[in-house]
Length: 398
Length: 102
Image 1 (cartoon, helix red, strand yellow):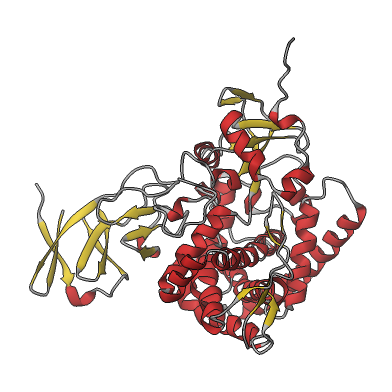
Image 2 (cartoon, one colour):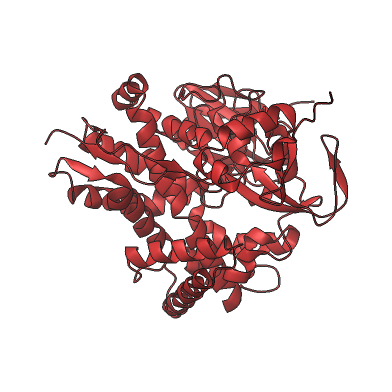
């Protein structure tokens, strides 16, 4: 009797990936590391070395995807460009986000913001951390760094949600398009007001940098500015939010390591890096095959769509011992790929590291030293493109 | 033939900050961690960004552009996208004066 072995990618559903992608990714890494997943219509790249290769060979695997929903929703962003076109846009944005500038220009604002939000709930003895701390902290600090001081945190959160939902609207839901369009127009108005302000006086924000930095072919035009601000709103809020809650979750469920970190706060950055490795808040990003090629014996045709699984690369057994285990003392902690690698390395990585490892988490644990999980409301983790706790209920002795 | 070049004084250096010195064949990034002084070429081996705009962390220097880190002792790359090492230079201290062997 012939035994027909099912191909791994043939019956994995998006719902299964959303609940818990890791068992499927492990199977792919071990048995079919370049795997066509029918439900997603993409080749899944799951091994660390292959993810690094794809990210560092844009001439073969381009970020300039055809029929990109992100381009449809936001406009032409640096994230969907390669080469000189990408470098030009990135250069216009980068100065306020460089590591030394983050420490010198934004540290006070970050500290003040973390303390302000903690002040609102510290006397209560309980909190839902996503909605009351992580998300508004990420929203407020992002808007200040961007230069959208007059936007509210609620607007930033709504814009992020609507723009990201638009970018993932493969189901062509008209309600999602309507929300994405409405939020996109609101962002354009906010950007236009900010441009007028910084044209009179530079203020060190990302929008100010975009307006004033001279790059190849002149400065960024208004359409480029609007598109890339939308990109930063879409990509710079959910990830720090989830990075905060993931690290809190990891520390509270690993009390030995939490006690080490509380005794030596210089270990907070290591705790953050390990949390980002274990669950990358941005777990997958797309690429498109630019020229016919072959990877791990699979023939990839020009135009084939790729899913780069950072979440899988970060648990590659060839790279890390016991990759499913949280261990802040690993060697080469920062060799994870949660911020990507190559030319599209996350522009906000240094800001995110400072937000999480030097501000939000040290301040939270210092001000509420006996923080613990509220087990009446266990957290629920969800997602395979973005992944993080939907909510995180905590309590402490008042 | 290597030569010793005076690059400044110990008092010019701030703990874990990065000072640069222009040599004939390129810039050198110098940093002080405790009693130890490190000198490396001021250029990432990945995309040629200036390491002096990066960060010193745990005896490594991180490139600001794409996150590559290098071991300050050996110049070895510690994570992608860098694959090649950066040059390290021998440091000599005489009194308050700082020298680098080029």
